[in-house]
Image (cartoon, rainbow, N blue to C red; front, side, top):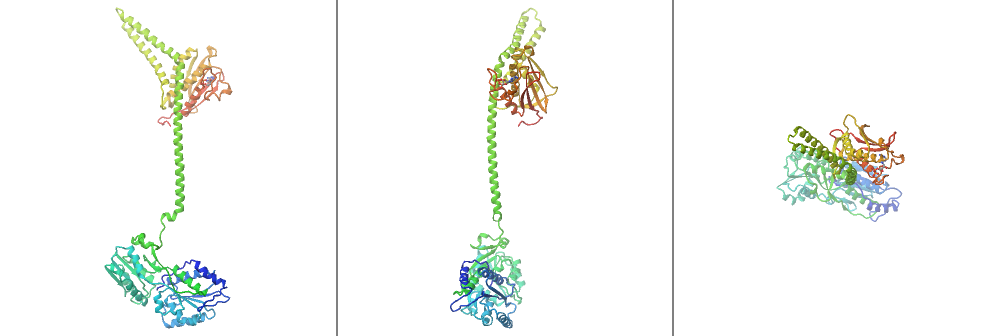
Amino acid sequence: MGLGEWSGRLCCTAFLLAVAALSVSGCQAAASDTSIVIIDRVPRVLVLYPYDERIAATTAAGEALRSRLLEATNGKIDLFSEFLDLSRFPEGEHVARMAGYLGEKYAVRRPDVVVALGRESASFIVANRGTIAPGAKIVAAGFGAATAEKIDLPHDVIGAFTTFNILKTAEMARGLQPDARHLYIIGGSSDFDRARLTTARADLKQFSKSYNTTTYLEDLSIDEFVERASRVPRNSIILALTIFNDRTGRNFIPRDAIRQIAATASAPVYGPYQTYIDHGVVGGNTVTFEALGRSVGDLVIAAIAGKPASDLEAPQTYIADARQLQRWGLAEKDLPPGTIQLHREKNLWEEHWVMLVAVSGLVLVQAGIISALLLERRRRRKAECSARLHLLEAVHLNQSATAGALSSSIAHELNQPLSAIRNNAEAASVLLKSANPDHELIQQILLDIQEDDQRAGDIISRMRGLLKKRNEIDWQEFDLNDVTSSAIHIIHGEAERRGIKLTSTQPPGELPVRADKVHVQQVILNLATNAMDAMLDAVPARRTLTFATGLANEKAELRVSDTGDGIPEERLIRIFEPFYTTKKAGTGLGLSIARAIVETYGGSICAGNCPEGGAVFRVALPLSRRGERPR
Ligand code: ADP
């Protein structure tokens, strides 16, 4: 073999410079002693492959060379390929027949450069150059300088040589398997295979000393190779050289033999050829097809351009099969620096980084929006909270004002039960002083005193609600009828004082609403006070204040109407504005506070005029469903 290290992808800078020289001379190259002269035609390059087309090492290197040359000359080059098949037909007759055939074939189109891939091709063309390509420049590649010397390569043949050195591959294996204690080296039975084994013995002499055992698996049949490799201890390193022939003389493409062995081997297998990758080998140190193709291409271009060129060494590199690393649990970090990893699955980030960046960006934007919304909600809640606090303060002031306005009539109202209590107490006292007190009468008097005390207590407790300051809404469910009745009780003294008749109509059932009871009561008191004010100038007999509760549009509704002058149409929209008043001592806050209260509990308030005269105010509150929590 020796041709496992070939490369194909070509970088162009140096090459283009050479081609520039070529094109300037109109495809005419002039050189010194080894010059080739091409006039009025594109250069011809013949590539000789030593084996048949199945040997990937040579075909891949040839392909790399071909694309390099085509790319550099813009396709202005004639490329010919010949497969000598010398592995399967090594006989002299075949070689002679081949030489004669190619000599005749290329008689009319003599190649300017012949590229001999592999040692066998080089020997062939050197022996037959006069027949096939007299005067052509020969570029040899794919074997070591030592081999070149051994086959006595003429000095005018330039070469891109590779060096077979199993040591670097062995060192790579040691890095990946520092705990390995056994070393196995596999080699076939052909001359080439034996030569490789001999070289490996010398190269690994020092290296093998650090292992408990070093075993050369040679002179075995393919089945024996497979069987022995499947029984080596797990802490072993297996180095595969070449197997062109096994002990029985069976012919192989080395990578196929290695694949059979590696498939069931009980320890990782390494090899110094790129072609072994994909056939179960972990990796090795090798010339890649790309690197060799580039090197050979450079030599061919230089030869065509007539530039002096000398032998060069194709650069070697470490390559590894990521799937095998995974199979044997070997760590990527233990690979030599710069190792080319083949079949490495991209991690999530490498494969989807665009999507990941986009999604992360989206998430960040979303998070930003959510934070902004949360902040906004917090601000809004804070604002709502402070607005509610302000409302509570305003309501409290409004309640105090109402209480103040009603205080004289309430005092008057309180006076009645208190006077009755006093009178009853005096009467009882007189009765007790008599010689024969009437116990039954005294008992009755005491009951009256109790009732009067209860009345006075009720009046005071109603007022207490009005005067109490609160920092939070006291949510509760209650009947709108009850609160209306309670408000009527509070104002009835004042209404009496002003000669106003109070009427009230209520539906038979309850009107359950959920709100702060005292607040709703305050709304009713505001409307009632305004109504009583509006009837100041009315004929005393017509002064009537009416409260009517009921259901309207599935809401609990209270209507407060009076028999005053009503509200002029143009003022109807303004009366709920703060500080709007038509009264001398008015504040213009009563209705705006009433509206704020009603809206806090999800209700509405509106004003209008009755057809028979006077104003009517409608308050609508949502009916509460039992169990529903206040929002
Ligand atoms: P104030 O009572 O301090 O004036 P309000 O906000 O309670 O403040 O009332 C605003 C105005 O609405 C009153 O000044 C009055 O002009 C008008 N108003 C309210 N209720 C009635 C009513 N029942 N009839 C006629 N006008 C009314």
